Image (cartoon, rainbow over all chains, first blue to last red; front, side, top):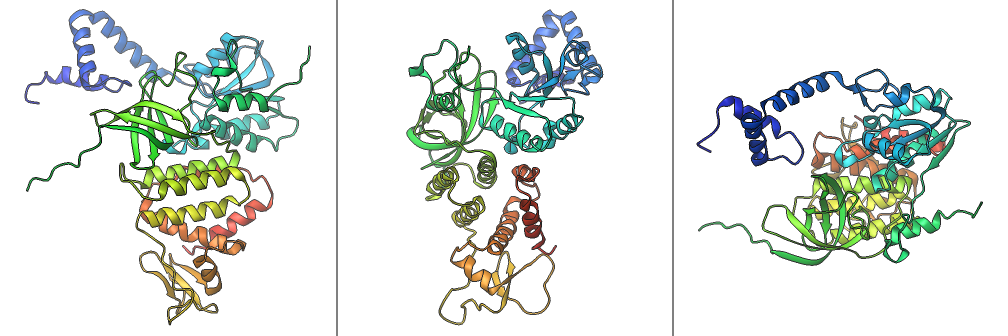
Length: 203
Length: 263
């Protein structure tokens, strides 16, 4: 390309391309928009990014992103210490919280076992999880990883490493027909799971 | 003469394929790495596969047989249709890890869009036997590794079982040298080579994996042969097998196998 922007603008465009799904063209559009129409917004963005990139770390207990030693959920004394729910992402914590009904604690893997993405057991903090379980406070471990092949592998790995611990009940969230779903339109694999995991009718 | 790029078919329909790996792309798309019957390994873009409004029905997961139709002019072709072609395999535990291991091998070793005649069938057979649970995982993996090496043109060539002067001498030992094959051992063991008793070599040549020590040697040979192709970056999926052992004898076995290579 013979014609290009001045170095500062060029640098900004290159930097914006680190965002997922943003290519050269979108980055250019964003950069020009900020320069032409929204300088305050741009400055705020720069400051917010700067502060967050320096300040945000991991919660010492559940590994989720936070700027304090503990995230608000882990710091909440009213939560039940005897239940621990393992999820893949902070978004999953939010989903479970919004669904309601769970008052225990969380452990956020920030990923799942996926050798092809270069993610092994230690990259998703499974050693830290094991150390936490060994302290003995947790009575029930609820494995709520995704119902994908990788999520399943992760669940199995966690089960394998924590089954040796005494007094720990390990459970996996159920997979099956979604509420309001019609059997006819549910895929075979899910339906098979729903059948295999059927529950005795209790009132 | 002007060398022209081999033309790619614009549109492929109903191609039998397995998904080896998928990764998220943008908000709702996936980039799939697939192994197909006629086109080998390639990457495809699958739109609208994630998120709350994703079409349910078919789930793009590894270890499920699919029929995939794709097309497009870009380097990254787009999936037009993804149809399930059979029940997803229910691989569990170590059998699932083995599936990951094989997928990692394929993604690392296969060149994109380089069709291999028999590989798809071998892969399919491997997955089905992993699912069936009658054979030990190790045997299945060793067999597949040998098939894969053969397809890539790196066959492990064994001396003849019977016949002329080349025949395996049961009472002798052999050194495995990656490029040259098996050489009748003379003198002390060299570093980084593997010395194999003739009896074991004979079993390996006819793929008789019944004895545990034969399996140990087979693993060591595969490792050496694959290591040359894989380069420095280790296979991540091997870490999965390092879990606390399910049975107590597991650890003893794996350390023994690990010690066979003298390096």
